[in-house]
Image (cartoon, one colour):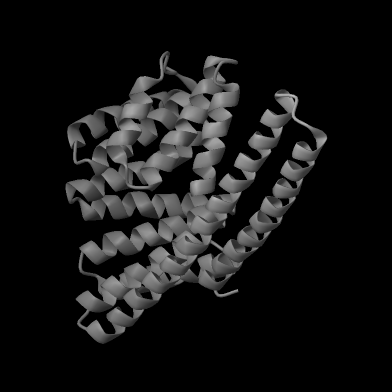
Length: 278
């Protein structure tokens, strides 16, 4: 997700001044990255800081959905309900692509309220929609959410079934984060089911995979930063009228940094593959 954050930041800087629509597209992308890192308050601050928010259309639905789940994550449930209701009102008039995500957001809000049966109904609708659209990522996500809701209802056998189904799709499609979450859900279900030994094995495997994947991606991020810095240094030398020998040396540094970056990216991909059982 660090790569997505860098992409969002670069896109925001490059296209922000072109139009309000471009500015909001990359603001929402940046906000999604923050939310995925558990930074709900920062997500809300970013969404509030961008001027001229969209009042209708797909971008408005995206903004309101993200704001609603961030408010819910911070347990500001009244605010979350108001924002989500606003998004649902927009979608009642026109079916924008982002409207499909509202049913999952509604389920998430109901989970935070402790309304697990209502949440399960929302997640079941999301699952049916994902399968109808042939979207396996959304299908695996809906299955994980169903395992969450049934776990909270103490239906541990159902929770295991949902998690296992999500993990099978995640392994087949290479969804590393979902695969790890499925392992964690299965571990929690086994623990509450009265099998702590099996639960511990699940938790240990999930943590080991996550740690290895994080280390590989941290190394890839550092290698990309080194390549960017080397390129900027060469460009500055050219701008300052440096000698050809200095520029040649800078180009050699760039070549080495690019080779290191390629190797780090390959290692990160290998870690993802290992996490997904490939």
